[in-house]
Image (cartoon, rainbow, N blue to C red; front, side):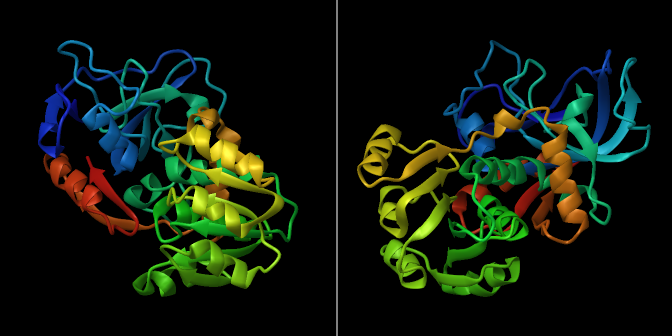
Length: 319
């Protein structure tokens, strides 16, 4: 089968189309004929060697956490009700021996795979699992009462956009930041108020919520400056470890704010969580945004575009 992988760490140019053995579904597993794999920031960390995914001799590393396609093989002993030909989506953990999702076929335990959103094509469905589960894990940890005020940074991005929409679906009042050219986008995602992003954003959030917001989902990795926007007893959720996480933890403790970290792999194999995202997409509560599509041979260009910044939605490799 065709896959996209790397044999050395480096820039986008290390990505290459490779041949790998086609896998088969064993007991309790299903095989997906992958039609689309989203390109995420963590994929660039895998490529550069900054992630926990390690090269192993001459075995290529295959990035990719988000996939969508069709079920084309079902192992014995499955109980999920999936059938051959079903349109599905899944999140992949690229630390596993078989690697990630940049491949024509991927085999996963059945609990990792759910039906794709009803009206989504494969590329659109591939934008949802990892980014949606990251935002969902952040909000789940905050454990907020309905009607809370939640601020979201990086709201125009994939994780931030899902955080806005998931918070709205949970009945919260949402304030968000955005650059001037993204205000219409973020408002369209459902934010009740939008402030300018950049230095001083905490003060601008306070102007909207003078008593302080109940929580912030920090998809932009703004960090300590956001503590001033949060009421005493409130919470800050970060979607990735900060460069000085311990200092942030201590700063939060000093001002009476709880710090939680979203860890998407806490939801590995959580069919219930991934299927919740599917249902919300079916109901129109989540927007599936594809920025552009690429054949496998152009994976390096997709990585370059992502690292250049300013992408709205997800870049997708189509197989």
